[in-house]
Length: 307
Length: 291
Image (cartoon, helix red, strand yellow):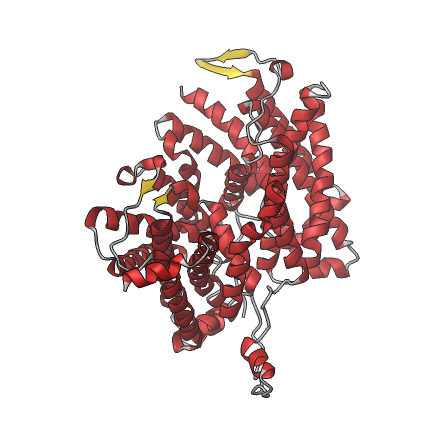
């Protein structure tokens, strides 16, 4: 089976394949952050820290233990989620911008920790051995990306997801309705970080080299931009935002040195003209139903983006 | 040794305070984390560098020139990137600020190149003074003096002038001040101008102190200054001054006792610890949320 998939991928243009894998990893990361920021309304500026914990954990598991890749990813996710829950327990008491700066500070501390972490070669970075799997990494990325979309869509409409949305809309009202704020916030944080960890593991094995400096503040900002640009709390929006922003540096490559300049201006421009994100307030199901000529069911209420 | 490190720390900390003031004032009025502020600090450093090395003016005129330039820049940034977003969600404004920050730093990268630029040797003649058993350079004294002077000036503007009164009123209650006939847009522009001018002065001082100006200096300085603002209690002007000094001093002491590779983590560890014990910062007001 491995060989068939290998030859299937060989049919793709390697450059295109790389862009697609970047998009896939971005989707996993952004959907994780979407659970924390979009659904629960807790602003986190340190998502890259959880990605780096996942990347290093997964790389070390492959290098030192040689675990099969599937088990590796699950173990990585669990490790990241446990760390997130431990961090989340004290800091999720903070609200708004105090929480944001705390996550940012935590991310910087994690980065400095890995820069001084002996088993991961400190600032030299870590070379990751080949994953113990038959299936090529790009296929893994696509499978995990699809699973993430399914998982988050499911969470969104579940009892758990409704509790998170209630917390986002009004913490006091949610608490009065008997929702345990701390427990749900920590669970959301752990779930988002689980996905960040898995995304980090995929990233590490796809690039086969990781460096603590790759997971700085700018990486967190990148992921947050994908979520906000696509539309907070919307799964199709997040997927779309990830696809646009993960491929934007490639599409803008023809401008070579003006690339980041245009990227920055584009962020400002998009926000000024679409403040709720590209897909914010757009109901995708509705549009699909209209496209095939059916009337959508009456929309009971419009979800409003918050924070 | 102790005195020496204390003076080094105060010099660094007073620059953090200068930048932190801009964050805290803007936050106090429109509750926006102005992520482009660190980049304004960087632009200020470059303008100072150009004035000193090309126009050959002395350091004080360079500081004034950089302040004026960045005042205009700050007002323009607010006008283009934030004004349209004032009524929409705060996250959108945050992303817009991040966009401005990426734009300005890549602009600086294009114009000035990737390597750090130094000041000409005669930019500021440094003499070492001996106070007790500490070596203090005149440059450090100038940095402390200029920062103190600027902060006193700010305190005067905010407490004694009419526009300062309008600023305090707007940060107290945005809508009511608008109803009372305060031109809120003008107050916000003025706040951006003031904050950017202080950051520019900080930029020139840091550039001369480390003798290095580069396109990415704004990021870490901005993050630390923001941490200083939050540490002191965001929205509070004395809080930003205190937070900046505290971070500067603790960072220098941390490096002195041998944690130099953890340098960037020290500031943030202190921040996280303080916030856990006092969730609204050292001098921040307790916010009671009403239903």
